[in-house]
Image (cartoon, rainbow, N blue to C red; front, side, top):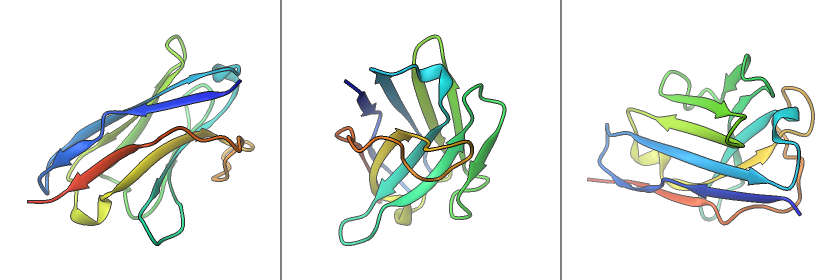
Length: 122
């Protein structure tokens, strides 16, 4: 079955950096675009970033553009999110999922990982 395991979150001061990882299994990882999402308690899930199956195309939410970078390693079935210049409003639980279709911000799988918590605070 599909497994998505996010890691790399933590507590960081404003302006700091974190690198999130998402290890995927149970599907042909290299055949799918991947998305990162985040959830703040009491708010709807927000799409953060997309990367195409080969890694050649990326797109970002306006709220993170210029600060976050999505990448992937198909040999390791892992997608990454490098987060720089973090702000308190980036505090959330971060999740990954496959993209429903090419360049789609919508998730493919109904099952989600446990997420990784990011807290940006001084």
